[in-house]
Image (cartoon, rainbow, N blue to C red; front, side):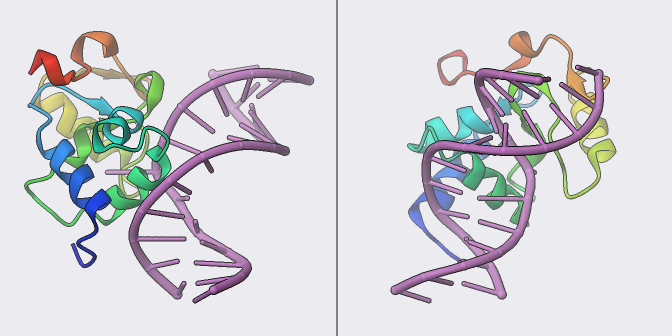
Length: 105
DNA sequence: TAATTGACTTCGC
DNA sequence: GGCGAAGCCAATT
């Protein structure tokens, strides 16, 4: 992370806390990071995602849509599928069930 | 410092 | 279901 800003670090921190088999939306991550309306900036930070310890692939768009992944959505789908998250037609199946919640740990 | 850029979201057609 | 426009935020140029 070339720019150790508070926000970016918080975002990465949140994403890192997402357990396997669960996913979070950009909005959720932004909210947990303290900026509920910064989902766009979150995406910006994720794009940089040069950290193996940060499961950026577990961050999906609202409504259970896959979103993007450095141009390879297919890879993201594979990674999610490998963790037990079924993706159909660019959408997460049982999105409400796999969506990560801080309290659900 | 100002302008531009997105892995976004939501609403309308 | 797909396409477009407006709104919001941080990072980058």
